[in-house]
Length: 125
Image 1 (cartoon, one colour):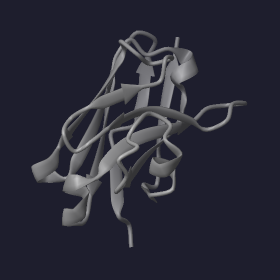
Image 2 (cartoon, one colour):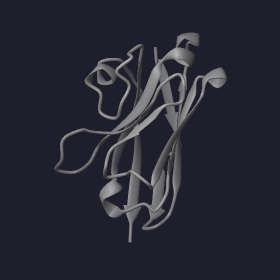
Image 3 (cartoon, one colour):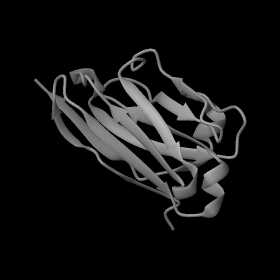
């Protein structure tokens, strides 16, 4: 059974935008830390952004100022608005969620929670 359902990946031009969504299937996700990881070519998995129940956010340096994570607790949904996309943003993006207070981008506690199926993001020039 899928706990997290992602959508919104696709292709964009350099400088363009995409918005990812991640819906938690159970009510518990309204109180969870939620975030995004990505796997890009020839690099290790990278934490991209995270948001806690109260809306506190954290970002990787590589996306700070370009990406925005948000969360609608009532809808159990997290969003990742990606602007000013670059070719190096190309990769598979995964949503993760967990009942951790250590809610920050790349948190291993977040990584040990539930994961979505992943959605591909491709940025081309």
